[in-house]
Image (cartoon, rainbow, N blue to C red; front, top):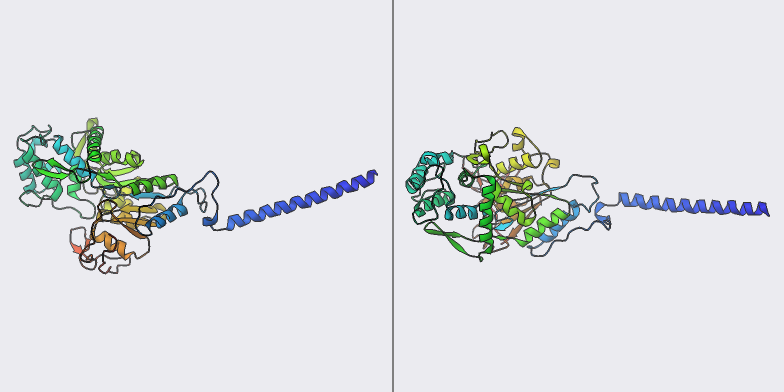
Length: 440
């Protein structure tokens, strides 16, 4: 009886061991299959939910953007323990409708916050300002304020000064039509854009943020289409966030992307506006002033790459944007920051609306979103779409009509460093043919 019981027990244990082995083998096989299955087929755990983008996009753009999130987001385990994928957005007319730099300039003029330059010499405000523009500004602003003091550009007495400043800033020419700027590299800076932060000399970043916040409140509250008086003329008086871009930025962040803003508006101004889409000041790259004792802005700008601080020649503009992105996001220092980096040290996604965004858009490795504002070089490259990574969307508010004539890609769509126009070329140097505007 004891022997029989022992035998039965032994048999039972052997059967249990065999069953356990089968379970282990099945688990191992399942694990192997899961490990070798395509990442796109892997079901995310209950702790991970891929964000879904809201509607409101042109054509297949929503699907392409969702595909980007699905492929590179945190719920996709195809590359475990990877660094966050980087996404970079331009700001003005890409994330918002209208220009926050313009909105701030108009506020500064209306509220008398631009200071009289030292000795009334306007040439000290920009190394690229022409003698004709310096004279026109001195004549218009005269002795309205002592050097270093704010000019009363918001009053009837200072309206002439406001008009001249606004003309130089907005048209890069004096009111009489004389060129206001000369001698700049057309691929690394735009002197009229740079002039706005240079005119902020004498204020601290905190004070500028206060001015920008006041302008933001006014422009968001103003009805669409509002005009405001600046000097004796009128200017755009409203700004709106694009709901679709706000949703995209939030979706990318939830999916684990490292989202940045790169703008050719002043750093503290963009910091204020970027808060509205959940991007912190430490993820904003705008035009940056040098500072004097006490943190007050000077009329000089920080440099990038091989250009030293105060040289005023490399702002967040075309190739300058590439330099600043490489420097601030990817930690590339010195002249190397001016160059295209290996794919692993570049953004996977970029969004822009203007020729100023060309270089950092081209650097994006997975997808490039273009908001169509009829800019020649940008639209030539986007419509050519030689690598299949470009998508085009009309402006979300007040989209532009179809451009009546093709973009002059084969002749004058590109602007060289010295300002000379020429054909737009692909990476292999072949010329892009003229392109018809088809997304509007």
